[in-house]
Length: 141
Image (cartoon, rainbow, N blue to C red; front, side, top):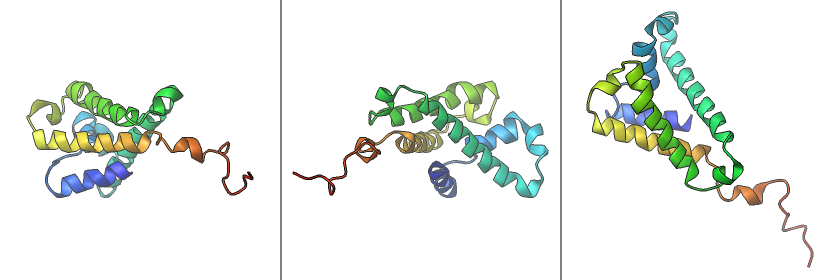
């Protein structure tokens, strides 16, 4: 959801014309989108984006703990997710994203995927906040 907020800012300032979830539904699988009433399509597109993000977050959770606990793993994972869309999904669905040069848009999408990686990644302080962590106020010397 935080990534969606960043994405809306990028759309609002003109860096992104159509978000990838919108492009996928409008160009890649338009028959699916046509089944959604027009006044609900924006919500359907946003829910699709949240679903992609949830699936990517769940896949991140399958990585070994020693990888998830490293500070850079999340952002690298975000960049890999972005690359997967740019190099595989968009071309295979013949989306306009894959057919035109758009450096500002690609940069905006890359930045919000790095942000996604920071959100989904495990922060280093997670080790001290778990249930097994000692409560410093209960410790006695």
